[in-house]
Amino acid sequence: MSLRDLAAAGGVRVGAAVNDQIFGSGDEHYRSLLADEFNSVTAERAMKWSWIHPEPDRWDWKASDELVEFAEAHQMQVRGHTVVWPHWGTPDYITQCADADALRQHLVDHVHELFSHWAGSVARVDVVNEPLHWLEGRPADSVWRSLLGEDYLAEVLTVAHQADSNIELWINETHTEVIPDKHDLFTRIVADLVERDLPLHGIGIQGHQLYPDFSPGPPDPDQLYRGVTTFSDMGLEVAVTEMDVLAHPTDPARLDVQGRIYGELVDAALSVDACQEVTFWGLSDAHSWVDEHFGPDRAPLLFDREGHPKPAYDAVTAAFASRARRTPVG
Figure (cartoon, rainbow, N blue to C red):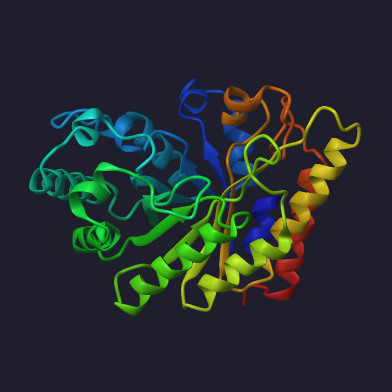
């Protein structure tokens, strides 16, 4: 059975981030692998503010619409990614804005146009991505925080809910499973939003496993399980939204080690009923953001450069099969 079939059997989503350049090139092997193995897609770049709304009066829907149409044709769900991102993916007219009222109006206009365009096609949206510093337990510095204040997450959620109450609203964060201080701060922030009954449906735990190139600690299934249960206990849905695992070229058994890590992590996440999705940040090793940042020899995904399944694929399918046995649909 494919990953997609196993996910469906367990009533969960298995997703991949889609490279807009490769997808838009018409690469049929890329598209067929995507449709065969996954039932959810996330635009790697095409729905980010800089790409879809690069100037105040200019929108570029081409790449995102093409992905949405593909998803609809292949019975796949779409995860919108992302609206507000303090770190990157935001155009100059936003990052250089100096007036709080003007920034609020940009936010309202952007969200209402997005959600109107996506109505009925996009199931859920990461409305805020990485509100905290990448590697520290403190808020990220951004125009959103400096102009709108510490409570800007609540404001973004409220604006998004007013635009379309049918779209699930998510907050997506990275490295909370490997940085305890960050996990603790993020937990307090989310708990406060929940206690105030703000319109928050779910939490995305990205799941980038970049040790030792970037992450301060190695992958730990127990910590990922802790993160999923923390937000599950708040009554929220949880997803692993951007998983990849580096396989270092100095280890002759690296693909087997990578497979074991993938299997343990996905199994830990899916062992919690509230975890309804695992999405991998790319389709195959041929096209990964990891190459640009850490080198072309890290092989971070489930399929190799030719699109063949690796040990990681087998380990992940086993984890999805376990979920299906525990919680079969129907």
